[in-house]
Image (cartoon, rainbow, N blue to C red):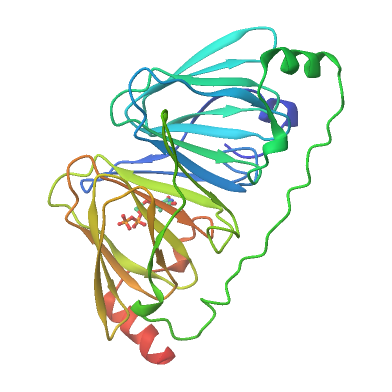
Length: 302
Ligand code: TYD
């Protein structure tokens, strides 16, 4: 789905089906900003460990737009535009809902092990929240024309990566913020703040059969954050000289992979979801898929 046609159609509340690349090694879906979703991503967050019976997110946003997917398990998204209420049951990793600004939204009926991914058009801003339904209705009726905030293009903070020679020692695991409360945990990354680049694409692999390995390639320019959003897996990193094996098993830890590193993903446990925040949209010419080509690429850099 491209950002074409009538802009008001693009910004209508709706289900959006994502690509699903079916593979013997598991399935893969991806979301690119201004392409599958009608906005530029400013923040990515995910909600997990939600106890049964809890209700989350009863509020509206004045300007923020969102795209919400159930990466695992299921929950209901209940939306109200001031006139009607609609309920979306989310239970597929390749199907999400676009939520326009000024929509009252609630999430409920979380299943065990549910994992909710939210892409947001704005950095976290408490002043954008409307917490009270009556005030929401009043603001809708007041017909205040709110300017759609100019989305700033935060230039990638790539100084750490611009070194011509990257090694596995440039790839580290970071503990991410975790907002804990009775209704579960939430980890949020604002572009250019908690993640040192602009996230333009999120992709995730799921339904991975035991014994499968993935990866087996390097990227010339792409920066990535890898997260075990559910269960666990190992990542074998290789810079042509050194190797490093990293175990990922928590949704609030991310492995940063800089460009020019060969990686393999292995030892997936049952129900594992590998979620990747990527600095660029998909580009096959950025891949090095042959190990000998990778070694030549590195030796010309070393
Ligand atoms: P690939 O990156 O090779 O997966 P893995 O590293 O897990 O082996 O991607 C598998 C296929 O999916 C490949 O044919 C390209 C396609 N794909 C996209 O179209 N968009 C994307 O964002 C990604 C990551 C992959």
